[in-house]
Image (cartoon, rainbow over all chains, first blue to last red; front, side, top):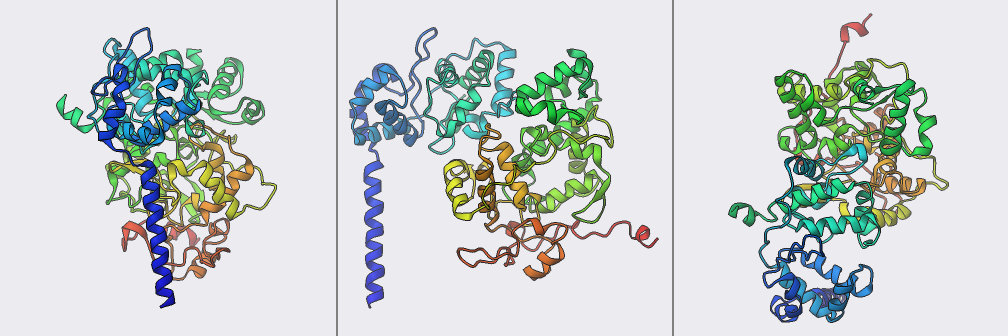
Amino acid sequence: MNKKYLSRFGLLIGISLVTGGALAQQGDAERGQAAAATCTACHQADGSGMNVPNGESWPRLAGLNADYIAKQLHDFKAGQRQNATMMTFANMLDDQQIADVAEYYSQMPVTPGQGGDEADEALLARGQQLAERGDWNAYIVSCQSCHGPGGTGVGSTFPGVASQHAGYISAQLRAWKNETRINDPQNLMGAIAKRMSDNDIQAVSAWYAMQPGSEEQETAQ
Amino acid sequence: MTICRRSLVITLTGCSLAFGTIYTATVFAQPEERPDAALNMLVHEPPTMEDLENSELHPELKKVIRYGHDLFTNTQQLRGENVFNDMNCSSCHLGEGRVPFSAPVWAVAITLPDFRGKNQHVNNLEERIAGCFAYSMNGVPPEYGSDEMLALSAYHQWLATGAPMYPDKPIYGRGFPAPDEPAEEPDYARGEAAYQENCSICHQNDGSGHYENGEYVFPAPWGDGSNNWGAGIARVETMAGFIYQNMPLGQPRSLSDQDAWDIAYFISSQERPQDPRYTGDVAETAERFGPTFHNRSLYGQTREHDGHVLGDHDNFGEKGDLKPWNVGMPRFENLSEE
C-alpha cells in the first residue's frame, strides 16, 4: 500500500514537471499572430522576409523550427546575438510571446529564397560542392553534415538554410567569420565560416537560396 | 605549382617543399607540428572528385569510381543487405576517406596485401574492406569481386594515385593517432560530463545519433545503430584518437588529451551489438581474441558503477542471426602446413 502510494505520488510529480515545462515553452500560433504584428514590416505577413541587395536582408522565418526562432529572440534580448533592430523588437516580447511568435512562423509554409538567380554556373557548382561534400582541403565540412540532407535543418539547433535569402545567409556567414555573431553552440558554425573565402560564402548563399526548403515546395516547383 | 600538384605524392624536397608546406599548414596539420611530423614521412594528397572528372581515365572506370565514392559516403544504400546499423564509411573516415588523422583509406591500397594481426593472415584490399562491413557496419560484406566490392576497391586505389606501393617511410596522418597519455586515468563520470558538454548536441545523450525525416545526419556512437564490439573503434585508444583528431566536427585537436580519453572511455563503456566472433561466452571470447584485439577494448570487463559486464549478451543488432561469411574464414591452409 505504502509502495503503491509512493509510486502514485512519484507519477504525480512527474506529470506536474512535464506540464510545467510545457507551459513555459509551448507557443500558441494564434496568440503569436497577434504578437507578430510588429514583425510583418520586415518579415512580411507570409513570413517570407526579403532579400535586400546591398542592404540588410530580412530572413525568411516561415517554416523555420520554432525552438530555433525562440532561441534567436532570447539571444537578441540578452545581447548574445547582435542586431540593433532585432534587439529593439525582441525586447518588446515576453517569454510567452516569444514562444507564440516562434510557433506562429514555424507553422507557415516555406517561401522561396531570393538572391541566388544571378549567380553563374561556376559559382553554383562551388556552392553545391560546399553544401553537399564540403572542401576538406580547406577543412570545410559539408553544410549538410549539420544542416541535414538538402539543407532543410536538423532539430532545433541547426536551422534550415535551403530556400533562405542569399543576402541573409552571406551576411550571417560573414558575421561568424568576423566573430560578430557567436551564438552558435560550441563554435560549430564559427570554426567553419572562418575557413570560407568570400567566394565560398557567395557560392553557398546563392546555392541554398535556390534550393527547395521543404517537400511541399519541391513538389510545387 | 601545377606540376607539384600533379605529382600528388609530396616528398619534402625541391619545389614540393613549398607545396607541402602550404598544404599541410593550411589543411591537414597544425602548422607547429608539421615540419617534424612530415619530415621523412610519406605525405600524400589524394585526388578530389573534381580531379576525377578532369582526368584522362576511361569513362567506364570513372563511373565505377563515382559509384565507389557514392557507396563510401552513402553506405546506407546497402542497408538491410550489407549494412545493419546507422553508419556510413564516411562516418569515421571523414572527408570522403581523404583526410589525414581520420584514417585516410588510400593507405590500405598501398600497404596491402600484408599480414594483419587481427585475423592472423595476409589480407588484401577486398578482405580489409570486408572486415569493415562485418564489424564497423555490423553487416555482411558484398561478395569478393561483386560490383560493390570492385567499386569500393577502385575508389580506394584511385585515392592512392601516385603514392608508392609498399612505401619505405611511415604514412603521414595514418589511422587515428591517440593523444598523449592523460594526466589522470580515464574516468567514466568525467567522460560522461565531457560527452554531454561536447558531443550530445549532435550524438544525443543516449548515443543514438540523429536522423532527420528518416535520413542519416549524425552517427550513433553506441547502441544498435553503431559499430559492433569487434570494430577497431571499439578499442579505447582508437576512439580517443578519432575524437581527439576529428571532433567536434570541424574543430580537430580542440579537446584536451584528458577530455578525449575520458569521452572515449565513457563511449567504450556502453553497449553495442555483439562481436561476430562471439563463441557464446563473453569471457571466452574476450580471452581468445584478447591478444589480437580485445586487450585494448573494455569487452568482457565489469562496468564499475553498475556491475554490468560489457558484451555479455546475444544481441547482434539489426542483422539478427545473419553471420558475416568472412569472419573466421581460413586462408592459406596449404601454406601453413609447410
